[in-house]
Each structure stands twice: as structure tokens, then as C-alpha cells.
Length: 400
Image (cartoon, rainbow, N blue to C red; front, side, top):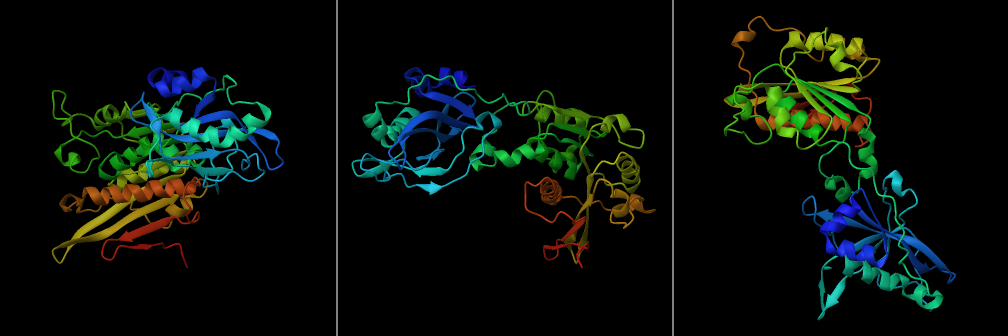
């Protein structure tokens, strides 16, 4: 990745040609072998780490005026800590490829021209500015420099996303994102809520996603489906949902399969190696058969549902998120949170679904999944959550 970016960005190329020990890790530019004086006046070496902004898949620029630093605070020739770095303690977790870079500080150094602060024009100006401040004393006292020409190992190519995950690095949550790397997730049902669950999971760095829905994509689906509707030459309407959604997301990530199948007790092979599932169906009879399979295979899962109705002329109702843990799914099932039968008069039922409520239902489900993986703070023991639209209150029937 570094060589590719250097071929497209003259500033990175210039830094390499001058001998800086560069690497790209989790969308950060890592500059190793930067010399500095420690508190005892001895020369040490550490790394500068700067966040990258990818303008597209080939061009990058510095994020802002700050940089992370893996060493102790640098000192000057006068034995005093170098001023003007706006030092603050910081922690940044990079990939295993950069296990030698333990960030301790975040520096803030702005350039000033004619009395006004300005942004760095490129990486050359930014790195040179920081190196001048940090390394200047060590270079003068010991004759050292940062130009080691060391070929540092780069990060592994991203095997999940087909484009670089700049969101994770910008938010500085690379270590948390790794908690999904071994997950194989099934999304069963791609209706209103299931489509949003799929959209959220496509952008989550799980290893594999398997989607299932045997229905076709009609106009009403377009009104509660994320993304644009393709009405061009290859229209989406009346095509299988599996085909529509696979085409919609296939340029975004690897490890995505979507099949036009109903899941029932005979679908064991389809769910082999699945570590978590989302059940997003609206028929109780279908839900029952899916539950039978998931519990028999000891796969943890979340079932979603909502019941909307018109109350005094306005829409009211609840949004449900039910978690069935591995090993105790049947005990949660026995509480009857999720309906597993179809009402006799179901044919006359008005099935109200609205995009924002579908998206809300999906967001609760995905948020709950991420809580369980330790990404978000949350109650690990909660199995049933209900959101009432009447007053937007969240209820947990498991609480005393």
C-alpha cells in the first residue's frame, strides 16, 4: 500500500526518497526512527504517527496539525522539555504489524504565517516541521538523523473491505473493530428491517455475511430500503432481493453472499460456521422454523419485530429487540417474547412499516450485537428490549 500511495502522492514519495522509515498502518502514516533527546540528554528514537485523510483510493493528505508520538517527551539542548508541542497523554492502538510503536503522546504544533495559523500543505511540510522541533537537538549534539532508509513492514491488505476503512482510523477505534474479525453473520429476511441490518453489517468488519430472502423486490420495498433505487437499464423492481442487494453491496466488501432462500429446519448447511444471526421476518410460522434451527445449532441470535397501529388517527406501537444467547436460547424462547404463530385473521391485518422505524429496529439490533462483542458499553444480560413510540421510552422486561 505504501508504494502504491507513494506513486500517486509526490509528498510521500519525497519522504521515502529522503530516507524516512515510512509505513502505512490502519490509515495512519507511521514514521519510525525519529531521533530525540530524553530527560537525561541521551539520544533515543521513536515514531511519529499521523492520521491520513483519503480523498479517494489514491490520493491522501494530512488530517490536521496534530501527530501521535511513541517516545517520551523530547528535550532540548538546555535540558528543558521542548515547548510548543502542546503535549498531551494519548493512547492509540495500531495493528500487530506496529506492535513496536506504543503511542504515549499526542502533539499539537501549528504553523503560523504572517501572524495567522494555517494548515500544512502536505506531508513533507508537516513531517519536516515536527522533525525539526523534536530531532533538532539530537541532530546537533550527536550528529544523528532520521534518514535510515529502513524498509518497514506495511500492514496486511484489507481482506474484508474493497476500499480502505478510513472511518475506523478517523475515530481511532481500530482495536475495537478487531473484535468482529472472526464473526460469520447471517441476516435472515431482507424486508424493511432486515435490509437495514444488512446495510449496517456490510459496513462492519465481520469476516463473512450471509443474507437470505426468497422474495422479489417491489416498489414498497424501495420505500423502506437503504440506498438508491436503480431504475435504469437493469432495473431492480421485480428482481430477487438477493440479486438486488448483492449487486448493491458487492463493490463495497468481500465475504458477502446473499441467496434467494427461505431458511427453515432443513437449512443446516447454509448456517454452518455462522457465529451470530439476525432474524428479520414478520410471519410467526416462519420465525418458529428458524428458531428451531438456530437453537438446535446453538447459534446465538437476535430476533427483531415491531407492531405499529393507528391510535386516535396517529401511528403508535412498539419496536422489539430480543436476544437469544448461545446455550440458553430455548429458555428465552420459553418466555414468549417473539410470536411464533400466525393469527387467524392475519390476512386482514394492516402491516404498517415505515423506513425510519425499520431503520431504528435494525439499529437497536446491530447495537445490541456490538454490545455483546464488547464494542459498546451495554448490559450483557439483557434479553428483551422494547421501545414504545408513544413516549420514546425503552423498557427492559428482564430488569427487576
